Each structure stands twice: as structure tokens, then as C-alpha cells.
Image 1 (spheres, rainbow over the protein chains, first blue to last red):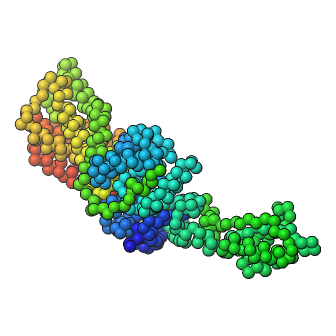
Image 2 (image 1 turned 90 degrees about the vertical axis):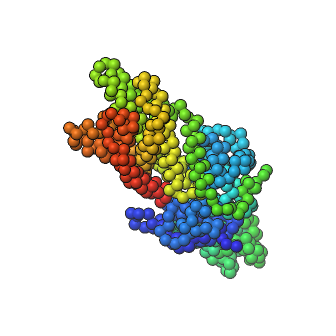
Image 3 (image 1 turned 120 degrees about the horizontal axis):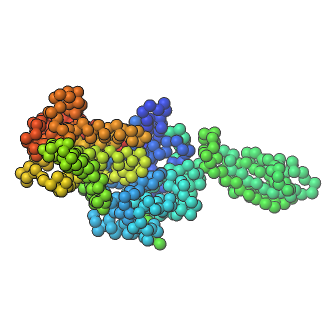
Length: 322
Length: 271
């Protein structure tokens, strides 16, 4: 089956700018996947989405959505994709329901069908009693819901969400996340951008890390964090046997094959050893317990520290994400 | 709870129907204006009505000018109403749409070529301009007490009102897409007032022989040719340019500003 989105060596340089906003990005999104582009503001995420949604003309490279080359045939591409923009761009001359109905009309959906779909989507997004309100009166969270409803009116194959939860309160943010998961369950391909690592980790099947217009890494969030050397940690609280010293315990733990480095944690009451490792920290719990039992030391506490996408970004770019 | 995805089950779409999308865009604009018909009419008709009243009625009553002057004025004022309405319909909303509200984005993502979104705006401006011009006829009958028009004049008037409105809409779109939003107020002040007074609406262009430099200035204002064409139909006794000259000039302006407006629109619509 052809991919939902295919981007190949995409370059965008705005006139008069010294550098490329998008600098040779390639990726493929499978049908039904939730794909994320993670990076700081100005990394080139929105420009990439702009090209894919036919609003930005690429300088070079190709991009296709639902099997349609977006530069060669933008009209057909527009019929198969939809966009939830970063900033609400609702039609303020219209009511919420009219926003949906007119959107469907632009996409050639018949009158009876568009009215039915508008009512169904208002209901599903919890806007049924606000359908006849002017969108001027909508809060950020309500506007975002309406934008999602609008994007679904013409049954797109691929939906693009640009920073879907920026500026939303936590409750509205979770609401949006749930809707994104439902979309995936319904077989719609979702491409989203975010500068929020939690959002990327929580929502996406695969995530591409973007900085300065380049794609630095691309994998599942779990694989990206697992691949990070020495960033997983295992903290163990130990009561050494009588006659054993803290230093000897630490040395013994350092001898474990998976441990890359072991340090005592200074602010703990007793002896707390922090073991740095690559890969799955939980798998080390057994060997650690064995080592301690062999020394007749007692293991009184274990805490696993998982690396985050933030750490991945830091290791790729040397900078914090935010 | 039902899932949002139920309503979004992907179907195999047919090729998009561009004509249908175009009609839907036009219907949206007509729908929005239709709800505000009275404010719309007040907005477009007040200025010409006062022009007509002060110059065609008050000055005549006070004896500063003769009643023949209204023959000169009326065609010019109708031309002005159409031309300015068309110009303002494309210029101001586009500046706001593109720079601030971004409301037009949903229509730019409709399945039709970007230039047709611009053409739709021009067609819509034409409709508004024709309504504004049509409203002037009963008003002038009421203000001046007479209306020197018969049904046989309608085809020619319509042709030139359509041509003039299209040029006005294209001039408006050119301004609206090339001028940056922070300068739009200045540009409007600098462009609108001269347009108003150099469009031969208040005087026959040919009578400007004694004021040659002003005649030249008026000749580059497209509104001049709309005024002159209407005058030649409604007041043949007043000196006027031949109709074919007006038609040719308006077609020329339409080509230039039509191209400029489509280029400007594309520049703003696509990065």
C-alpha cells in the first residue's frame, strides 16, 4: 500500500534568507500512523507542514499526500487532506455550525450530507449546544475542538495538526489527545508538530526530531530514548552487611556488565547508588539484587529513571528543547 | 461515546469538483452579505447620495449652478458608486484576512486552484458593485426628482458598469495584496481621495482642455472611462469621450490590474 505521506529531500528557502528553513528532510508516514515532528520553534516543522498542505511551495525535493504530489496537483491533494492550524482561523462571520457546513460545501459535499455530518461532529466534539454561537465567543479550547470538527467534515485521508495543544489548558489538551487517538483508531493518518516532548511521547507512533531544518532522528519514542547511551538510571538503596563498606558495594555494582557508571547519591540518608546504563533499566534490577544478596547486603529501595525525548534532543543538539 | 473517527472514515474520493467549490465560495460571501444588506447599502450608498444631494440639489437651489449640472453629475456618481464599492470590497477585507484573522485560509485549502479563489473575490465584488449602482437609480429619482434613463439604456449601462466594477475590484485586490497592513491606512487615504476627484465624476473630461495637466491626471484614472461611458449614454448632450475609447481603455486597465491582482493574491496565498 502506498504511504500516506512521502517527503523526499525537501528543501525550502524563503527569498532573502541566508539559510534554508527546511534543509533536505525525507520521511515516510504509513497509513493509519500518528507521526510527530518534534523540535523547537523555528526548526522548520510548520514550513514542512505548509508544503505538505499546499500552502508553501517547495524550493526543491518532492512531497506527496495520499498518493498525490502536492506541488504538481495541489487541488486533488487538498481534497484528501485537512489542516488544524496553529492559530484558530475560523470564519468569524459565521456560526460554529455554519463553519462546518460551509467547509463541507467547499469540498463538494451535498446539502443533506453536510448538515448531517455537521450535527454528528458537533455532538462528538461536545459542541452540540454551542453550534449556533458565533465563533467570536469561543474560548481557545472550544475553538480547537471546532477546528478539529471542521477538519473532519470532508473525511480526509490525512489530517495535519500544527501544535495541536499549544496554549490549551490541561483538560482541553487531554481532550485533544483523546480525539487524536480516536482518529488513529478510525484509520485516519495523523501528522502533528509539537515542541512538547510529553505530547510527542504520549501520542505518536513515530517521531522525527527536527532542528535547523534538518531531520536529526526518526523512530518510535521508545526506541529513541532507548538508543540514548547512558541516560537510563537505576537508583538502589542499600543497607550493607556488617563489615562491608559503601565503597566496596559500589565497586561490586560497577562490575555488573550492563552498568556503565555507578555513583553514590549524596543527599540520601543511607547508601543510595545510581547506576547509569544504556537500554532497559528494569532488566538490571535482578542482577543488582543478586549481587547485593551475595554480599549479604539488604536492598531497601529501587527507582527507575527513564530518559525522555528531552534528553534525546539534548544529546542530538547539545541544547535544551525549551 | 461514539468516536470522532466514525464520521471520518476515509472514502475513495472522486476528482474534486472545481466549479462546485467556486460556487460554494461565492455563496458564502453572498450569504454573509445578505444577512447585512442594510448596513451594506448604507456603507456604499451614503457617499454618492450626499454628493448628489449637495452638488445636484443644494447648489442648484442656492443658484450657484444650473439644473443641467445634474446631467453631468448623475452618471459620474453612479460610476463612482460601482467603482468604489468594487474596490473596497476586495481591498480592505483581503488585507485583514491575509494579515490578521487568516480567515481566508480555509477557503485557500478548498479543492480549487488558488487563482480561482481570487477570481471569486472579484466576481463577488462585481455583484456588490452592481447592487450599489442599481440602488443609485431610485435614490437619484428621489433626490433630483427625475431620472434621465430608459430601459433601452440598460444594456450599455450594464456593460460599462460591469467593466468598471471589474477594474475597480482588480485595483482593490492589487492594493490589498501588495500593500503591507501597517501602511494600508496611509495608502487608502493617498489613493482613495485622488481617485474620487480625478475620475471625471463631477465634470466632463473633454471640458478640461483648459486645464491640461489635470486632464492628463484624470486620463490615468480608470473611473474616468466609466463616468464618460455612462455620460455618453445618459446625457449625450454633454461633451463625452466616444464609447469605444472608454471600452478599450477599461479593457486595458482590466488586463493590467487583473494580472497584477492575481500575482499579488498568489504571493499572499502561497509562501
